Image 1 (tube, helix red, strand yellow):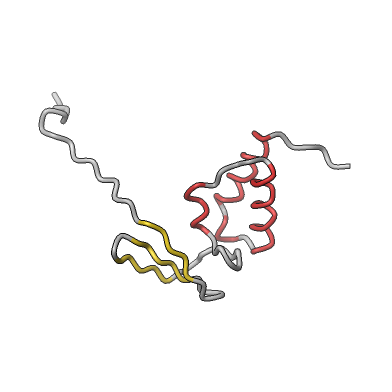
Image 2 (cartoon, one colour; image 1 turned 30 degrees about the vertical axis):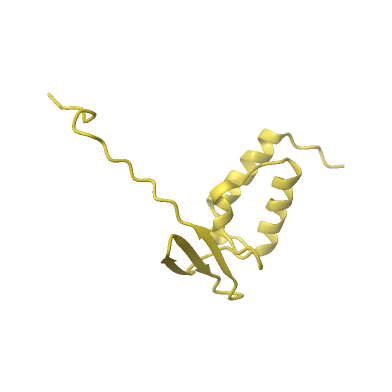
Length: 101
């Protein structure tokens, strides 16, 4: 019988899997998604590391940035995923810059 896994252990296993996702197969991605969903673990931006349709990890996707959207085309199945591109540039004013020495 399998021992039930705590949420912290499941989170650690999901993080370890996603750290080396380029060397994984779609079946492994499917298992990790099932584990994350069963423990209510949010993937956030890590969802963009694999194809939504065939679950194969992106290795060399075709990326197009246009009109505030990112389009990634899967090299295996040809599915196109779109996400809104958010600019996160902070510009410090002269008074906020710390001076050295």
